[in-house]
Length: 203
Image 1 (cartoon, helix red, strand yellow):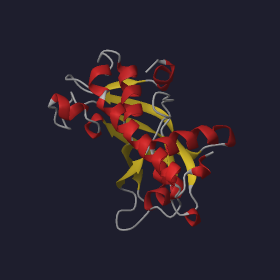
Image 2 (cartoon, rainbow, N blue to C red; image 1 turned 90 degrees about the vertical axis):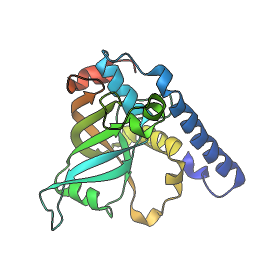
Image 3 (cartoon, one colour; image 1 turned 180 degrees about the vertical axis):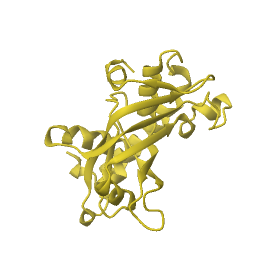
Image 4 (cartoon, helix red, strand yellow; image 1 turned 90 degrees about the horizontal axis):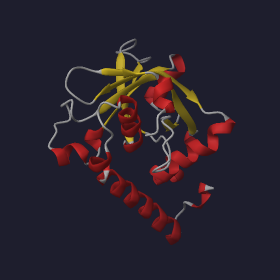
């Protein structure tokens, strides 16, 4: 479906439109943030509005072997307005953190509304609890054939540049299979959400 993202003017225009739509969508975040007492909805909201996150792995490389190692990855849980809650990635085994995952697939992903216009508009520092962020923990795994089309749609609509990345890098679609969820969106400490509640709620 996305082979058409090439150098032709129509494809470039479509890519620009998708980026513009993503930017406009993030601008609306301040007006539609779910009530903070609806923790699962807040978690889904953050997961959908963030286009990237910091993925922490257990390093397999010296001199930090066995220690935490955080890296930035583009992410998408679905096309704009169609979030699934599942964080999808487009990965290559050439990437240092992906090499960590080959040894130990456990990882944590942090996403914050600081990367949207929400916190700046409200005057919240990224470290403020009011600038909502989530931490998702689980196992990173390749998506199966059933999920492949949606993962591709999710990532290539939010990150159209991915379609032109070098094919000889062995790119593949992966996801974080979430086992634990933490939400910090207000004063009083971090809150937890079960994966069941997270996926069942309407974001």
